[in-house]
Every structure is written in structure tokens, then in C-alpha cells.
Length: 186
Image (cartoon, rainbow, N blue to C red):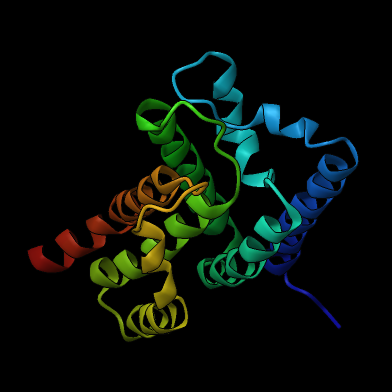
């Protein structure tokens, strides 16, 4: 069975999350110190590392399926687009959390997940195609429960959720708004 490069890339990223959790579990959560700590110099490393780190196996498991599915939906645009979208969302959301987040360690892929989710929804607005609208509807229906992630809850980084969603909208605008303005000009 041939697996596309996009799917392979997504599964490799998911495997990195699993490996990080295994190491974290056997080392008494020692990797969590590499999470995102707002407004600290050492916390900047968390912009890169925090999506791969999780506070528990349960936390990881709750993030894996949405990460893989939403990543795959974005990767249907091509591997290069997926990489660009994911990197931009991760960096932008991470920087925003670093600026506005509570002074605690923020870990987990949920910022990226909320970013991919919002990107897919916003992309439909900018592309205005039946395919992107169909993907947005599947995304909205399949992951409508994500809206509960915007409700504050103890031990949950609502900042990551909000900043991730905002980053996803911004990235969709950056990547697709030119097409909309070109269509309107014609």
C-alpha cells in the first residue's frame, strides 16, 4: 500500500508526539520544562517544542486524532501548503501565547489543532469553492465540539485555543485573500 508524502509526514509528526510522551512519562515529566512559558526568555523554546509535549497520556490521546484528521484535510492542498500552514500557525499562535498567556507552562498540540480547524473554516470564505466549502462543513460538523475549548476550564490553556484559532484565520487570510481580490477585480 502506497502512503502519500503528506500522510507520511503527518504520521511522523504524530509519532514524534508519542515518542516525546513516552520519554516524558519515564522521566517524571522532565520534558515539560521545554514548554512555552510566557514572557520568559527560556519559554521561547516552547514555541517550537510545546506542540509535541503533553501533560499526560490522556492529554496526548485527546489531541492525536484531531491533529491527524485536521492535518490531513489541510494536506489535501499539498504537502508544501500543509508545511507552510502548520509552521505559520505554530509560530504565530506560539508567539501570541508567549505575549498574552498566563505565567504557567503551556504544552500540547491544541493550539495547532485549533489553528488548523480555523484555517479550514476561514479558507472556505477566501477560496469560495465547492470543495473548500465541503471541507469546511465536514470540519465544522466533525469538530463542532472544539467550540467548547473556548470556555475557560481549570488546567486548560484557553490562550492556546484562542491564539491558535486566531492564527488559523490569519494564515488563511495570508494564503488565500489575494485570490478573492483577484476574482473581484476581474
